[in-house]
Length: 106
Image 1 (tube, rainbow, N blue to C red):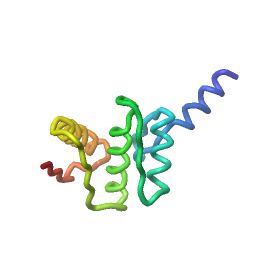
Image 2: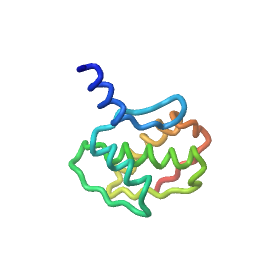
Image 3: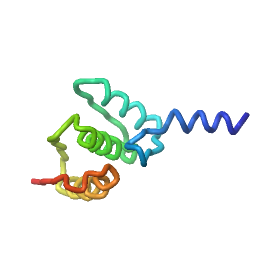
């Protein structure tokens, strides 16, 4: 019974990125992913380390990988966060099969 409950929790928290990759999300990330998929715009507030940036970047890259988007803008409040987001995008774009995706930061 415990194994069944654990499998159920895992399935509820799994976000499919592509045919070969999925991520296990926390509750906030799962709710955010659903909101991003259903809404025209989304505002998300959560404590540091809740996984906001990770979820949003993966969602944006998924939109590019599936052809739903060909241009995106991510606004970060500090230069340090811009650098961190750029590093994460360069790592994550390979997971999404977007090796040729060009990133520009200002």
